Image (cartoon, rainbow, N blue to C red; front, side, top):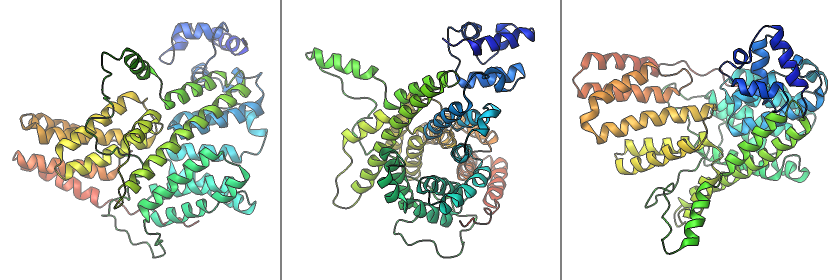
Length: 474
């Protein structure tokens, strides 16, 4: 096993008079550091980044023997998986902590595209747009449908996040116009292209369902809610939560054994995450293997996303007059793939909010149970959509409890006040407004009018939020 990286870490650590425990800190255990230094274990690339930072050295010091071209290509592949899997923070860290020599080995258009996608996932839309606009223009001029498709797609999401729906619709339609050319050249794997294109069509169905276009000038007021993208899957009504399947009868021992084995089988997303973790361990010592592992993980991930898009499509078609409901088999298949935790939880949160507003408490409670079960099974994600979905679910849980358990309302009011006071900057403005509206109603019911008045004033401030930036027209 390659020990040059471990030797470099030990040399730098001892030169600074640090023990393995001091170097490990909160990022690893002393045993892990010892195994890496002795060459008995490979260090995941994110850990190498943190170790280099603690040692006060650039990552170059630890990767002197690595081929910079191979490392850059592998790092891009790993980061592309991370972006698709909802780990934009890790993708950004990998891409911004590479040896200096890596940036002089080839054209950096692929690097900039991947970095822009990671930045958009972190909510840094302005930085992402600054990278994407020249990439899209260069791709158009060079007749490169692959780069144009990715850049236009990401620009559309950035514009939608900024509230500029007309520009988002135009950009996504422009991206979809390149799908046929991409399919014929196989520039993008077919499962990935189909998944990304289906997702765009479903988003367009949300924003422009009758293909009327947005040729009129910008007229959306600051009081209008942000358009909600609902191109995700919300399960059809079922007699019991999908997360609790019926038990096998006792007289069917083989069926019971199959049930037990099935319960312990990893979901597709877990398999992809395992491949990605292995790629991170090999990135610094065997970039070629890391790249191959990342490509396998990405392929699995987009197979899952394609099944999710199909599930959402069939659900919408099933809602049409005369069409059947989404089958239980399709629900089960979706929950087994579960590759988009942020979108999945967002779909549940939207449906639960709608049911609570309509007073359907039992149905809302069932969906809350399903959402909590899925959230518990899926890994924590740094993806902005996932964090926002979890934040909304927390509020909806309090709303459901307030409606169903009157004796707990005093403590729930205190919880909601604490929730509002700690509302994060990255939270959706519409969710913040909903929180204040709940507080006004709950406090008024408790005859705490002075405090309710304070939240009326706060709600008024939130309703007068500044207009989105001048629309970007590509």
